[in-house]
Image (tube, rainbow, N blue to C red):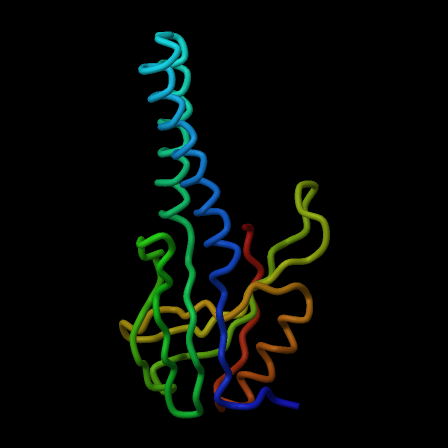
Amino acid sequence: MPPRLPFSFDNSAPAALIFKGILGLIGVAVAGVIHSLLVSHKVEGVIAMALVGLIAAFLCARFLQGVEAGRGTIHRDRVEVERVRVCGILLPGPSGRFPTRSFNAVRFEQVAESAEVFGTSGRVVLAGRDGTPEVFVAQTGEEGRDLACELAQALALPYEERHVPY
């Protein structure tokens, strides 16, 4: 049975949690630098905490390059998606209102099992065409295949399946 339209989605929780954790680590590093400078007067502490802060800032920058998060609603004739704001910072991802006809397909991207990842992981994506961005709908397990098929049926779009290495 296809999902009821309008279909609301929000895939921002994992990205927001990771981002908040990295920002928290940066905050601890800044507090450590301040404490080492003003209270303990230890240069080693300043250097160590500054190094931790720099590493956390590097990880934050790398995270922001690879993350995609958003929330929105899929209607029969359009898809509305917005970027997510965490601690005042917009996470990367598409935003706007796109007609359903501007998508090629509903795609299930399956991540191959590996020694590091146990079980099957997948993502449901609306594949854009002609300048329309891909819209990441859900991070799922094996059940994402059913969701993608049902969304494709509900939107009268083709269903695609891809195996991806990540």
